[in-house]
Image (tube, rainbow, N blue to C red):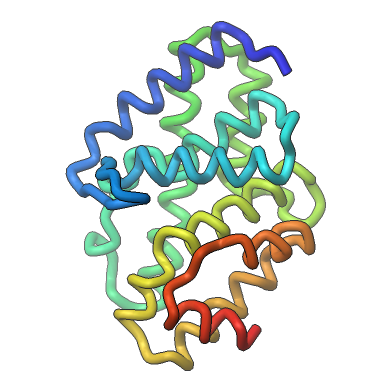
Length: 193
């Protein structure tokens, strides 16, 4: 699939924005700004699910966590209501930032609205691109953040979170879970779903 020059421009803008992430993360022996790595992995998983993904889905994958550190979880009450409010605010924050960068790269309003709709997760289970994006996000979480979750919570809570994650995924997405190299603890929990 041939990608436009606008796509190359917006990806450069996204990568530049995410490169400012003050948190580093290790992956396969390399250190990355956290959101640079998450954006790369979101896109990689989306492309495993849809190798010929349209530009809008690719951009949505790259912007799903864009500049997330600017809206920390600690700014919200540390309860379920606070968590849900943070998540909803993040969706809008990411959609707005994606739209700004797409406009700067020359995208039309229709394309911007499409990416923002995907960022807002409108259409999970009914929109194939939205479901692919959700699957990619879940797979990235399992690949990059699962061990952190295991270290933080009791096994029963981690298993519950994993089960809730799997329910959001398509059959194709769930099938890719087995391709992730989990730690020994992760393998034991994943084996229970």
